[in-house]
Image (cartoon, rainbow, N blue to C red; front, side):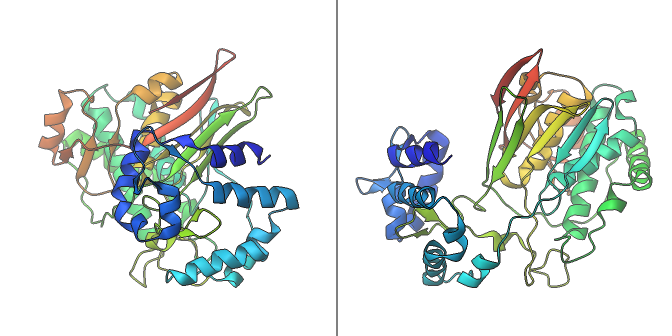
Length: 384
């Protein structure tokens, strides 16, 4: 199972433009860490587009796990101790005991059925809860009855704004606090939110509430399907680009910084605490039709992932468009306040009208989604 990964790590992969740019942005940190320099530098400079990113130390570690036929030593053995030593050397707080206590947990996904399609996404502390809640609100307002154009756009933005407000004020690790998931996804709450949005659309105004946005980027997503009909979406993250930007010597493992995803207010549901997981933005998702998987999709781009997933699923599930069209469609991003990032390809006539409603419209980058879909008995893949 590990042979392909070992080969990629040892032989290297081309550092395409976005990866090279991200390495360049972290170069100051990598330059100060000898183990990181071995991975992310070449000829005493950061890797450039077209260079090969090689990590022979990571290949050796994976080969050791393969030879042992077990990952036990990664959590409770010599490799775990070296990881813990790497944290300690760099001022981190993860210990060998923390690694030994870790175990994977199998959870039930959050689900939303729309006609004959069902969306399945990772539950808290992952980020899919946010776009599922927004879709539930749109379902309650019967969004597709709204006129095409500004009314539909206005309603979509407000549904995401309400979902983000609730995420940023009410949610935390459900293993350590009573997260109001059932209430936020209930029919009654969806109808309540839908009523507020319908009134706002009719009166051409925006909803008012207070939230504090925070910048979080990074993450990578892989989506795949096979000839037997299995679909998988897997999202991984270091935190912001390359996490802590330090690498464990001899293992090729660059450490993360998930603590940054906690809220610094000790009274907040997402405040740090013993054995707590912080909220994250990962949204690996599978869509089924009558129980059979037809789409695996996820994204990279920090807090922008949820909005991009929401828009792609609106296109794919609600409007019945194929994956290529769903990925090609323009997207917006909002985190509950009045700042709305909209791609330049959005219908031009709506842009000034959104400003008149009270949104602060900007056009920065949006998340990158990758997916694979079964369409007309053929698998098709795409990324944008």
